Amino acid sequence: MVEHVPDLDAKFYAATQVMDDARHVETYAPLLHEKFELSHPMTPPLQALLNNVIEESRWDFTYLGMQVMIEGLALAAFQAIRDLICNLVATNNHGTADSFLKGQHAYLYRGKCTY
Image (cartoon, rainbow, N blue to C red; front, side, top):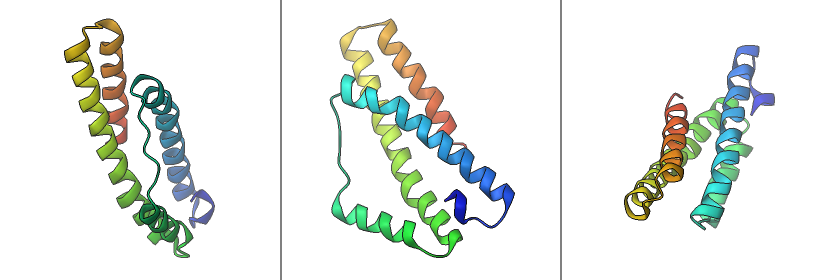
C-alpha cells in the first residue's frame, strides 16, 4: 500500500497504519493461540475479496477497500476478544494476569479506533 500512494504524506499515513496493524498482530497472535487456543483461517470468499481489493490498480480504491473490509473485521475481532477477556476475568479469578490482559486490550482497542 505504501508504494502505491501518490504523495509523501499519504506514504507516511500508510506506513503508520501498517506499523500499527503489525503491532496489533504481534500482540494478539500469542494471546489468541496460547491463552484462548483460538484461530480462524481466512475463508475462500474472504480471501477472494481481499485479493480483489489488493490487486485493484486505483490506489484510492485499495485504501477504501482495506479500510472498510480489514478495519471492519479488525474492530469486530477486537470486540470479540474483549468479550472473551471479560468472561475470563469474571469466571477464572486469576486477578492480576487477567486484569493485565483486559488493560492491554483496552489500550490497543483505543488505538485501533483512532483511524
